[in-house]
Amino acid sequence: PGLPVTLMAKFSAAEPATRAMISALGHYQREVRFYERLSERTPVAKPHCYYSHFDPETGSALLLLEDLASADNGSSMAGCSVEEVSRVLLSLAVLHARWWESADLANASWLRLTSLVAPGLMAEAFTQGWPSFLLKLSIPVTSQISEMGGWIQQNLHAAATTLFDSGPRTLIHNDVQADNVFFAKLDREVVFIDWQMVTYARCVIDVAGWVRGQLEPHARRTVEPQLLRLYHEALVANGVCDYAFEQCRSDYQLATVLAPARLACAVGFSKGLQAHQGAFWDALLLRYPD
Image (cartoon, rainbow, N blue to C red; front, side, top):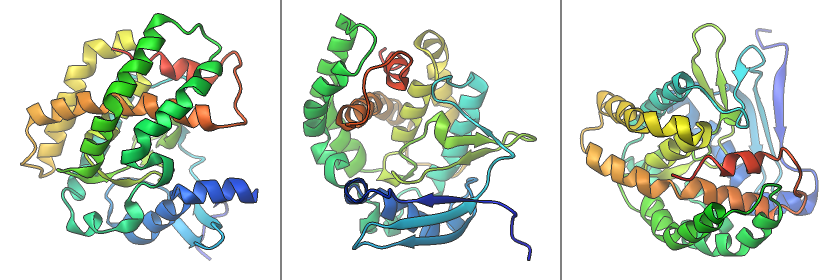
């Protein structure tokens, strides 16, 4: 009595090898622990969790979550409007301010990124995954794409180790893309799903990945400075007083390398993905260059 008629069940992968690989990355444990330990104290909208389970020996996991069918899901392929991007940035500022420089999170080992997504290994993983990624593109590998690969290779290690391993840090969603965002139909409240990559790092990782991943370059370039200022002012309004805008802007520039690197690794290492017209990675890759 009193429970919803429908729920969403999120299972770990059924195939043992795939489940073991994803579990080794820490994805299942992080999301389950987030709902069990942090969700109620995190003041942004997310699905209510009715049941959670994670078995570290087998990697099996299960979440029973609120059904968000009444809200509008974003689309990473289609991108978002500037107004939608702004709404998400304001919600991210609330999230980041709540856990700013939290000693509890700094000591939470389950939040640390592991395996190929560990900060110290990201550059090596990119080097291995980039050639395979290029083979899976159905768009021409232009000089701009080749130069992007060199730029990522040159800057990724410094960006990853700085932004993930040094302060000021906070709780970040770490996978803010339109597919992981819902907008309530009435008031357009932002609801975040898929907390498998949640971790403790600098806030701009969320901001740069979101802004750069959702707006086409010609539209982004005209509003990017104002969007970053909007986010920073919201962060200050929510109580963060020790993070100057100049540092926020510098960190943001450093963070712009992370999202295209992760895209290349995710696609490059996925054996089931092959080049085809209309692939999501073709569209997303072209949004990241300056």
